[in-house]
Image 1: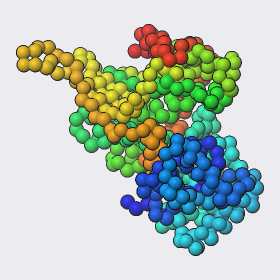
Image 2 (image 1 turned 45 degrees about the horizontal axis):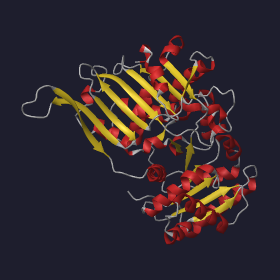
Image 3 (image 1 turned 45 degrees about the vertical axis):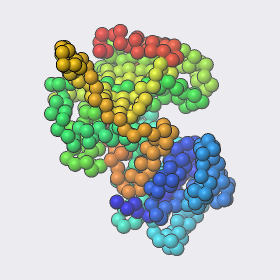
Image 4 (image 1 turned 180 degrees about the horizontal axis):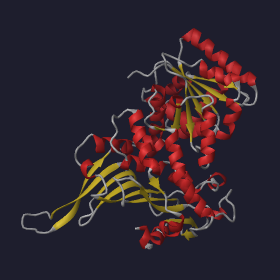
Length: 468
């Protein structure tokens, strides 16, 4: 499929998101010849700078992130696709000027689809969306029946109520078909593999239910801490940072029913259905079905409240209220400063053998099927657990991250929403998350502590028989 001619308009073009993710991902796509033939970028921010100054800014971003491994001839060609437009977000004039610039480019170079990347905090959206010039930018971006599109990043609200308010705001300028909500985990290769593993084969799907499966365990352990994000992280914690989004999408892929097709509409419909049936622990069971902890030394990190009760580790036991999954234990578990990096989905089958199928993101992307076999050797007797391992291509972790973001940018350019969240997925995620957060605010689940780099937190919650 040939990607349509596209103009990417980045609001917040000099901000952190653009520096860390968008510019490096675009360069990754450029180096791998995956950008459309007629593709350009307009950076939009409040800074007073020329087009050349912005291109120098982009070059500086890539120079700093490349660690000296940069092809400067390739970089020069890449910089040619960038221009800049200063917009004071509170003033109408900048939007009108940008709309005129886009219209002139369309007349002189041919019409292109307009893809807006909102790389600014959602708190700024109301200011931007209120301007008639912004709406003119959107309305002028229709090509071949395709409407202008917008990419937005999490957080999608702070709770169910604020998420709904954000959706109402987005709907003032865009239809659902135009909105691309990013969860980059959906672009991870191993998670994309789950759909084909389950629904393009007859190997396990007939046994993929409560009759055969004992538990589904979603785990995201990180050895890294919050680094220099103290002020940001202390307001959200681990559960909101990854549990409310990445982990629930992982769970949805592992437990959803077979879609009618592999198209975006059908895939997202099944993800939505299973998330809407996910149930958090009831308040009376919260103390025995949820656990939270904070690593020692967290409160001394710059930007963190000295009396903070923000969790850096959590574990929750939940259930899916459906005939297919009734009685199957669902575990969500994640933490910072853990003893090892491990990100995976583990599906455990029932006794007596308790075989497992693991979809692993880290330390390497692979699929592992554990099975029982006879011990090796003609004269040997008895059984032993063995593993089939299917490893995906090896890629530097940094490049893999860029590839994931690049994949999502290309999917947005092509108008394919299957790797993006539907507003109903966002609502279902908060419907599950809010009761747990509220219980923590009431201290129904006391905050434990653990030594950084240890597995103390894991041992603490596994000692509770109600969690297993």
